[in-house]
Image 1 (spheres, helix red, strand yellow):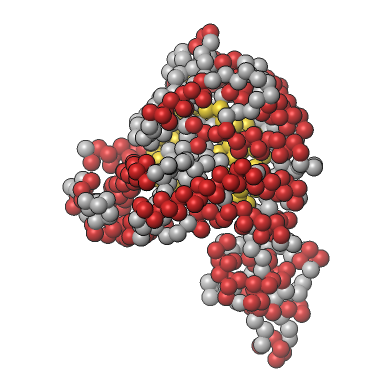
Image 2 (cartoon, one colour; image 1 turned 90 degrees about the vertical axis):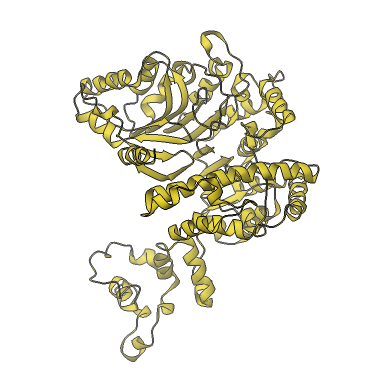
Length: 580
């Protein structure tokens, strides 16, 4: 009916209304009465009409503007709403555990919900084995120490930027926020309650309802055994194949490491698995993809070093088991009939980790499947991040995986690619990975020249390269609309020299696109400075000799792991100077 009548939101600005009208039936009649006269009635019948008399098509249009939680509340409040208003499910989660797989099965069995799925998220954070309670306790203690540090940082920022009587609170150090058992003090709870956002409430609830380590260990063992069985039997791989076959609108696959991170006061993804955990459950952090872990044992460190530095000698061998998720996704895409995927995302939340560098270092089964996937699926968007730990250096101080022809061949095969986000992670100052060895990134070796004019967006992260090679990478991008340079270091000069060369390029070539540039400089303690509007204004309309764009107070200071924490650089400098 809505399609037949051509109903859309075109008249919302033409109908006179006020806050008391919405969502009244008279307001809805003004919007849709012409197309649906039977829904509103006339005379005495009109007085008895309610919003529940609206056809399902109109209810669906109304609910497009509601959040998912609000739609759930509507469905619970009224049986008619439950029958006629669908949940909005455009994302599903897959991981080897019962909660995620059962929820996915219900969605796949529903006659309508599976038809609206646009994205599948594969959680690749496998649980670690803890053979006894003592090892579990040590991991919990290390994690909770980190969580207290994150909570303390959050408290100090709340005091610094939100409390008028900050002097009273800033006098307190760590002991003022936590008691001897590691629980929040009354003062800390008062600060969090005053701020009253979801993260603050989550911290208070976690401290108030934590269960014993013994109970948590018992439940964790059940989850670990459940996960091992699911991987052994391939339940998660079968679920992915079912999604690829059953969801006609599916266009995006996300492989992520970020579901279980300890520094997030709230999970990045609210998965059914997380929602199924008992209140107060205490779990050790998971460190996927053999990334740096701050409290690793000697055996964990040795395993990481040995696994990541080992060369794959057999072309039929796969990547190490820790990268099972990537292997499963690529092989599943090859067997899916007519896959509709256009976006392939490896999401690491700005952590300098990713799929092992071994993927592109030498021929292997996963590389073969990756090349077949690139030739058979018309990907338009790729976010590729690599774990460089253990890579072997060659001439010119360049890692082997960056000098081999395989990465270049892979990108060349993506003939429909328009959006590329590449993190070779060959250099980093990010606080999470202190042991990365600087290796020079040569764009001409890794990125095909034919790809550059086709790109609409481009991002390069955590790389060390020469200013001239970066210019040769950016200037051919004549169609780019947005370019991100995140944590880029130069081997042959300073950033202002590179910026002036870029300014001269756009000054000479007036007929090329003027992309929005976003520059990110990583600082200490997990902070970063973002420079965008000010830099673009100087780049396209400023004077080349104007040095103010590189000044101390320009840009925004952000938390590298939570970009909602964002303060103007000038305000940040002023406040931090006041604290000192």
